Amino acid sequence: MARFHPAIAAQTLSLDPSDWDRTFVIGDVHGCRATLERLLDQLGICENDLVVFVGDLVRRGPDNHGVVEIVRSAPNMYSVRGNNEEKIIAATRNVGNLTTDDIDWLRSLPVVISWTETIVVHAGVDPRKPLTDQTVENLLDIDLLNPDDESSPFWWEEYDGSLRIIFGHEPLEEPLIDDTLVGIDTGCVYGGSLTAYDCRNDRAIRTAVDNSEVYDWRF
Image (cartoon, rainbow, N blue to C red; front, side, top):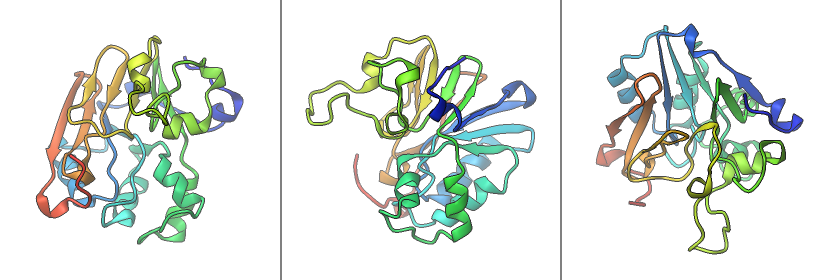
């Protein structure tokens, strides 16, 4: 199992997917409630399925509260905290239509969700450091290993650990799935898609975004 610094271990939630019929991890929703509802319908989610989110439930899209309401009201849905939740908690970004209760709930989110040999984090880990030396900032915001150098590799290009890491944060044109890495932010708020990773069948399921739901062109 993952062994983090005590400050992170205190913000880790452990789950047991064997308690559920199916397990899905869903990429960055960014306030796109209609897209999320379509994906949940496409997956046929019921109360016996476990659904985990990689964070960034909010910001950029039109309905932060609606997305939070879906996740927080479902006993089978969990999320880690993303860098956009962190910005709202720190009051450095507009909260949109979030309520005070919504923000309190975002503040309560773990930074890691784990099960056997697998962790779900928002952004990733720094492959140059052991887990015990990772910071919350690493887990929420890492992408390029050297942010000031655009030719720098992304963290996952240098990762060689045995722990399987499921992450979002950096929009990818296609999901990344291999033995130790699952990247599933496919840019739903940018005109890409919203992706779910089916853990038991090791496959990605994607819902396309309608043009009316594109709020920031990136691809």
